[in-house]
Length: 251
Image (cartoon, rainbow, N blue to C red; front, side, top):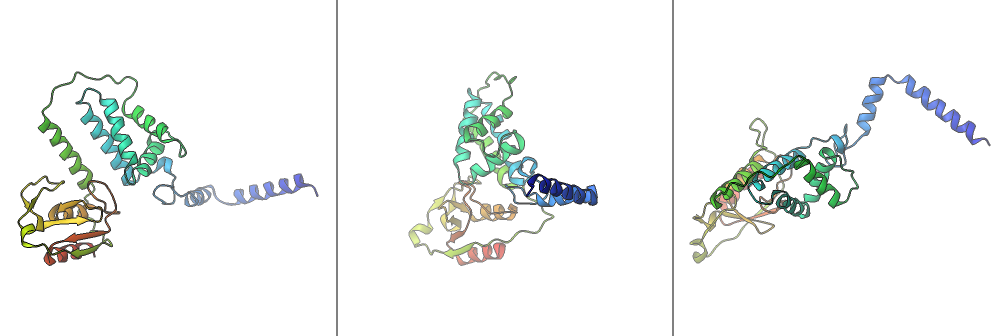
């Protein structure tokens, strides 16, 4: 049996098949066959993916870079933050996707290579540390609050209906002593809020009900905690009326 002849015939058949399909249709078929390894959508791959999570991460990198430009060692401070983000829940997936799509990394590149590439993209060779202008601690905290606001409210689109989620809500009745306690919300930074208005997530982080409701209204994919970015699966409230509010929002 002559395998060279068989292979030659197969190549000839494939060539005739490609020639018989219009070029625009063949291109469409190839696009349909492609599937992005990050967002799982067809028609593109991870190298040119413009998923909302990648774009938001890029914006957060820019904000963090400008924030660390106010410090004495901006580049190293940014690197420490980026490494911490990479090690956070779901962080590796987003950082790796951003490195491949925006910084010419390979999908199988090591974490060190991806982090270095992103840093090189944020701090080009001609980057020079500017003279540091002393800033007050209050100014830094204000910048952090702005960053949190942009992270969790930049995706709000009033023209789109709210997406419903599968989140289990339970009620824990507080005794009289705990009802008098006050807490601080990590999103709005209000310090004098009654504990009965707070909601505890499955990751054990607590937020006031108004901030959490606004956060859920702005989410179009998987709802996550504002602090650790863990997926929100359960919520514990302290009043039946608050439970009804969230059930109406998420179900």
